Image 1: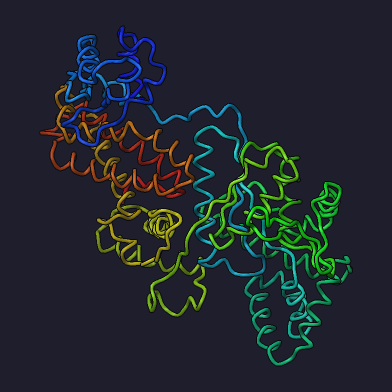
Image 2: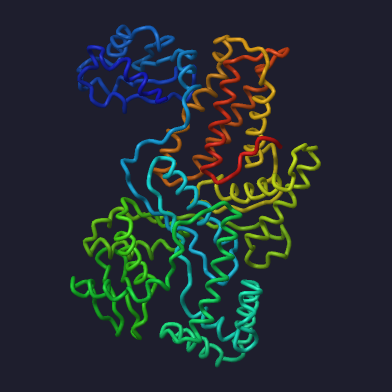
Length: 555
C-alpha cells in the first residue's frame, strides 16, 4: 500500500490542487509520527499558486474529508496528514508482497566469475553473494533475470596444470580426486618454477597446444574443466545460488575477430608499438588495449565479444557486472569503447563495485591460510552454530540442518549488512550472535513469529481495532507496508544492504511490539495483533529469500 498515493488520491481533487501535476512527488514521509505520517511542504506550491504557504495549507486542510485521515494539521506552511490507523491496517494486513511490473524487461547479472580448477575463496564471496541478491531483487520486481557466471577457464594457468600433471601426477587421477588433486599439483608447479625457469616455458607451450586444439592437451584440459565445474556447482548449491549460464572465457576465443574487425572498419582501432588499441585520451581514460604486439587478446577484447554475444542472445535492457572496485578503470574503458562503436545498449551497462571482505587477523585459525576457503568458512560457522543452538536448548528435529542454515546465513550476511562499497571484516562470533545485528537474529525473529502463529491456532479470537493503534504498533505497521518501496530502492541503487537494514529494523520494531503488547492473553487471541504478526513473518520470509538466507520456523 503506497501511503503517499493514498494521501494524493484523497486530496488531488481539492480545487486548489487540481492543476498540480507533481503532487505525488511533493508529498514526503515524516521521520517522526508526532508530525503525522505524510507531509506536504506548501512552500513548493507558493510560486505556482501565487499564495502564501500557510494560506495554501489551510485551504487544502479545509478541503480534506474524513475517512482515511484521522486528522490533518497545518503547521507553519506544512500540511501534516495523520492517517486512520485502523483503516490503513485493514488493507496492509491483507496485502502480500508483490512485484512491480517491469514491462517484460530483461536484465543479465554477471557475477561470481570463479576461476576454475582453483578453490572458491573469500575473495569470490562478495561478488557471488551480492550478485545473487541483486538478481533476486530484479526477479522479485518482475524482470526476466539471466544469472551469468563468466568463469575463468582460459589462460596459462591451465598450461601450468597440464605440465604439473605430466611431471608429478597421473591424468587418470583427475576425475577421481578432483580439484584438491589439481590444486595441490598447481601449487607444486609454482614452487618448482621458482628455481626452474624451463617449467614456465612448458606451461606456455601446453597452453598454446590447448589453443591449437591438440588432442592430448584438450583431453586433459577437458577433464580439468569437468571436475572444476562440478565442484563449483556443488559449492554454489550449498550457498543456494543458481546460474543460468556457466559460459566462460574459452568460449569466446574464436569469436574475437568480428569485434576487432568492426573496430578497424569504424576507424577506432590504432596501432601503437605493434599493439592494437583504442585511444581514449580524449575521455580521460588512457587507452584500451585490444591486442598485444604478439597478437594475443586481452580481457577487454573478450569482454567486448562477450557483451555482443549476450545482446544477440538475450536482447537485454540492462547488463550488470558485479566485480571489485579495483576493476573500475577496466570497465570504464571498454564501456566507452562500446559507446564509441554505437551499440544500442551502450548506456545500459553498469559496473557494480564492492569493497574488500576479509577475516580479522589471527582469528578463525590457520586452516584458511592466506586465502580463506568458502567451504572452510561454512564448515566452521556451521560447527559454531551447532554449539550455540545446543546450549540454547533447541528442540528442533534436525539440529544439523538448522546449524548449516544459520552458519551459511551468517557467512552471507557478513557481506550484506553494510553498504557494498565499504570494506568489511567477517568475525565469526559476532556474526552468530542471536541478539545483535545478525542473520541469526533475523532467523530467530521469524521463528518467534511462527511459534506465536502456531500457539494461536484453535484459540478463541477477539476483534478489537484499538489493539493496533498504539504508536509503537503503528510504526511497525508502516514499516511492514514499506517493503515493496524498499525493494525498489535496493534495485535502483544495486544496494543489498537496504534489504538487510529493513529486516533488522523490522525485527527491532516487532520485538518492541511483542514485549509491549499481548497477542495471546489467557488463551484469547487478538485477531488484529495476530494478523500483524503474520504480516511481519511474511515480510521477513520474503526479505530473507531475497538475501538467499533460510527462514526457519523453529530455532
